[in-house]
Length: 625
Image 1 (cartoon, one colour):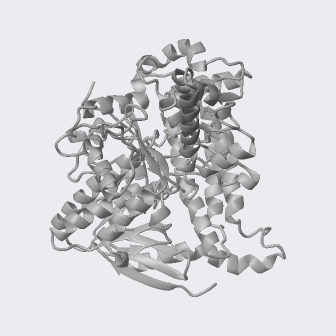
Image 2 (tube, one colour; image 1 turned 30 degrees about the vertical axis):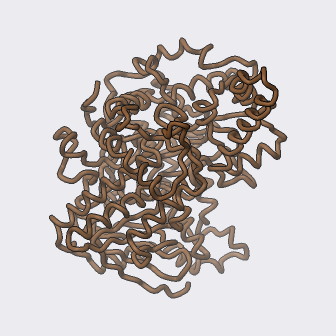
Image 3 (tube, helix red, strand yellow; image 1 turned 45 degrees about the vertical axis):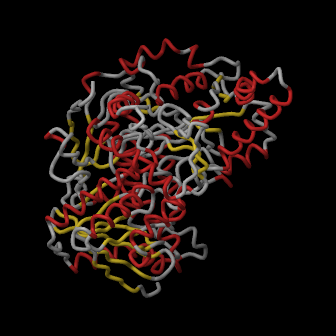
């Protein structure tokens, strides 16, 4: 095992992550830090900021823009939309706080050079009520550049994987991590820390296997680090039962939003039946949320899944029909018709080239011209995110002017751990913030963090012996491999350790089969969940024997450790919520109906020292009916 240098970094504010929330936090924290004694801000990113996070490949639309100044929408409108789409499970105060600030983030993006579509009147082109269209291949690069300029490159550590929090009693004191490029372990000591390290992919077995392994809708490098970090620090979590299952173009996970909203396309089964019409009566079984507009995403999924279960698949996006309908009014003018068809065809391909290049490649490989024939869509595997249509994450303090007393404890976006803040995928119960809202929430959290540090400016006590334990724990997979690698002639087969890929396959298999993944048609039960928890407990024991041959495998080992805690919190919370509230995301076959008495937050708290869990019900307090 090589010798590792330990690098200690002292800072006031530590931002963990490099995605949209972290970039928003960097810009805002830098502004307020200069006004409050020139506080030191440090950002640590697992990847490289230019292409880090969910917007890494690009984006063809900004999915949260209200247009408040022009009267397009109100904050109350957005709160209602989010609450309804999550079957009633949302923190009105958090959603409203992000919604009232999100437009300013979008205007910053445009100021920094993001090419947002405008019409002849100079207004943004909407792809739906809340979406605006853009040429977004360079979206993340533009936003990251502003963050880097605000902080200065000397304060940014890229290619550093954060493993564990450092605690001072009930207060956060920093974080430990390692370089994925050099033999260095980092110890970051801070007065306040922001968790914004993305959601979790790879907890469930993906549809893509073989040469497609690692392809997913959400970034494959998001491994549950936000959830692990906040849980390991002792923070209360919320909505850990809520996983998101997007319907996407099959096999390459291409986006469907523009096709539904901009191109007005229909989704049908193989018989040409539109399941949203033929199965409309099913919606009445899901309480008031079956009759809201738009229909919640999970219920739209569910109706399509029912068709697939009855053998009516594949499900198709009727792309050719949609393009023909849009060009129809030009049919009397052959030249105009040809021009419009070319324009629509270009937009169809651009939607993928902006954000999912692999889907364009797959279309070409499968001889699919969208203007000529339909293309398959399918439900993806489950993901854990607090930013898109999921809601899992930390339970955070709401804004002082909006949040009821039960939801507010001093500093906006602070978790229940003193000095530990969360934003983006790391904060729960505030769904549908997407990229722009995550950036705005990062800004909100950063301003609050500066206030916290000004008012709590003492340096937390750091137990050096405990830090040494965390450093040893961080490097343990490499020590395990060094100790036992000579026991067998094939490094992949050894009774004394397990390599990260095999561990990942075990985790994904048990979650898929027992917690309601693709192979189980997203269906589970208490008996299955309890059996899955039994196997997961055994797997957690084996995580102590994870081995790593190099820095890359060390990262993969820790990704698995992080995913495992996310998986456990999910299983425990799905058991705790005794109903089926999110059909289309998961279905409890033993309790196959919604129960109004369970319109509550299902929270949990993990004690890292004892391994014990506390399950908690929190009331939903409405600000908007």
